[in-house]
Amino acid sequence: MIEITINKQPITCTEGQTVLEAARSHNISIPHLCFHPALKPSGACRVCGVEITSPTGRQTVMLSCVLKVKPGLVVLTDSPLVRSHRQKAFVRLFRMAPQAHRIRDLAHRYRVDLPPEPDGCIRCRLCIRVCQEIVKVGALKMEKTAAGGQVAKGDGQCIGCGTCANLCPTSVIQVTDHDGVRTVAIQGRMVGQLPLERCEACGRMYATADFLNRVSHISPGHPDTKEHHNLCPACVKLMSTRAMTEKAHLKK
Ligand code: SF4
Image (tube, rainbow, N blue to C red; front, side, top):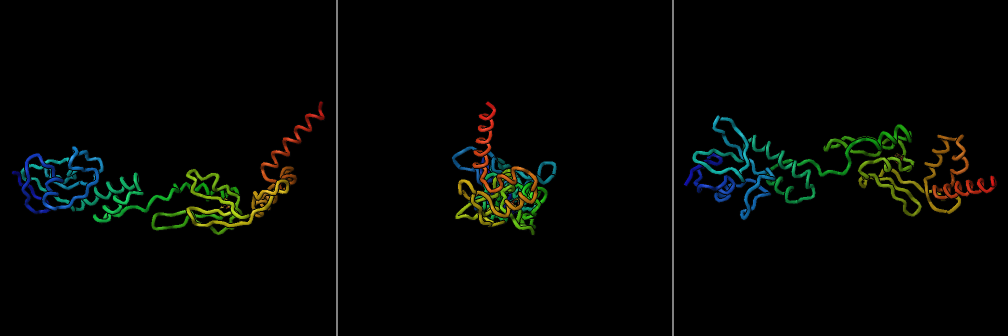
């Protein structure tokens, strides 16, 4: 038999046991996720770290699922060093599997603060910049939150152009057309809701009036703006193809 100390409590264990096994057999809780009594330990999840004093007298964290007991070993399972290691280990796992309730529950049990669940936005601000610098509307802004900021409705009025959604590298901005209304939303938070206009040729609802007004205002002299402004992209394409074919016939 071997005697070790866990949290200042003398523990008797058998040779070849790991610290985690010894702790479990004495009802001392150490968090673990990748440990299974029927399998060899791997130390993959890293949440079972405990503090020991190395032979040189230095405090260090070792994984209790792989650390074998030895006479006189002094172990702490909840020191500041352990809590700091545990926090990092849990955050690493959480980033890989934010949907896993078991990780959240275990973290909660050991008073580990996990970051907010990833929301799909990488805070690149492309949407905010394009809306401000190119569309010149400023309908989006970065809002401060406990999680370190999120894209929110800005001071400008959204014109429903959809440019932000087209540029978003992670597709978290949704533009949905339903019952003649276009809705622009970021992760369920509405940014704009505007009625759609019909294409004068095919009758399909295709763009918002505010967007069309903006286009004619920005490029009033452009021939396409004048001619095609009230047509959907499909009809514009059809018209251009027809015009080119007629031109080719006339040349013959
Ligand atoms: S859809 Fe609205 S928020 Fe997005 S770029 Fe256009 S005006 Fe800005």
